[in-house]
Image (cartoon, rainbow, N blue to C red; front, side, top):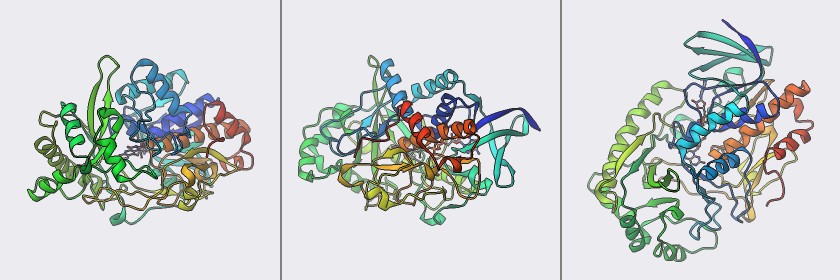
Length: 477
Ligand SMILES: Cc1cc2nc3c(=O)[nH]c(=O)nc-3n(C[C@H](O)[C@H](O)[C@H](O)COP(=O)(O)OP(=O)(O)OC[C@H]3O[C@@H](n4cnc5c(N)ncnc54)[C@H](O)[C@@H]3O)c2cc1C
């Protein structure tokens, strides 16, 4: 069956990259369709990962803001409504580049629908994109499955925002993925309320060495412990990881599993008058060795992760001061994929580029995330050996990373853009940056009647519009 409308730009997947791509494309004048398999938008930000949480790392280690645009716009909107907190530059995190900009995830999930309407994005939800339409090497639309049956929808440019590069792969774009047994573990997150934060903070102050401190270059462990021993504001801490003495005891008693360490994120929720502080656990379950391209594997992940989070919850309740009356307010509806396919594009971003804080003439955004830092399925939680952008700066993301080789009229944004494994662009902020850029690029291609690859010849208009839409491209380290 053929759908009767044709679109300029079709975006597959309404997660963090997809919503940014849709808004940007529509704002640049394209008739834009966003297709999502679920009934809600936002992916990790509010649906299926942490029921949202904080944006972190919009800043580099020097404290310069390096990421803005649509992500900043959504933060600002929620801040004005009282459902976000200002960018936090607490003493504990200052100089780390790992600052938090908290938002209420559920309010974000509602607001993003308003933004779709305001910008005139057409939505098609409860719809799985299963294939592409092609004319030679040119993508000409998508094939979807939904309650209407199997439907073909034509579009001039298609953007793959599925997170795993499913659509680009179907279209024949080359990609890479490490072997199943080496993939980072996948996680089902859960959130608790009912924590006595005064009691918890008293435990932190008395036992600062029980925690993995925030890494700030030049700061010694002793200085970090000193800050923790005086801390009185849970929001400033952002993330608590370690719990070493408790972990040791719980492991000895068979009351912790061996797939991750103990830790959680702080999640403020509600408006100023009714703010609750929740504990959000997004690495207390780790399922290793499973392939996101295999539904049997994903099913195994769902079962195993639920086993692990029950162990984690019971352990926190029993052993961690302040958690004795904690209760689960949400278990995320589905496992989140930490690592999958990366598409090979016209540029392949490397760890060396990240370390050198490299700048590119076709910059479409920046990132200050260190490369590496993989999650591991052990009580260590994270592997060591991260590469930070030099001098506390950031590296540019080149437009060419979004243009897959061998297929025309297709762009990729989000997790699956073209990078090596260590510089994998899987974080919320990075995905919204590449989403926004892909949206503007796709709309421009339609306007100029050129392919995304031809746009590489002159990206000046793309860069101009991105800056007009608030993106940061220049002027920072
Ligand atoms: C456990 C975990 C914790 C994380 N914690 C953090 C964190 O603390 N901070 C941070 O910055 N990042 C974090 N991340 C990373 C980040 O949140 C995600 O990687 C990022 O949001 C991915 O964005 P995306 O747009 O590429 O994909 P997603 O947000 O996953 O969006 C993909 C969307 O496409 C839809 N879709 C998929 N296939 C189809 C199809 N065939 N048809 C239609 N729709 C489809 C999906 O339903 C989904 O909505 C975490 C990731 C995980 C797994």
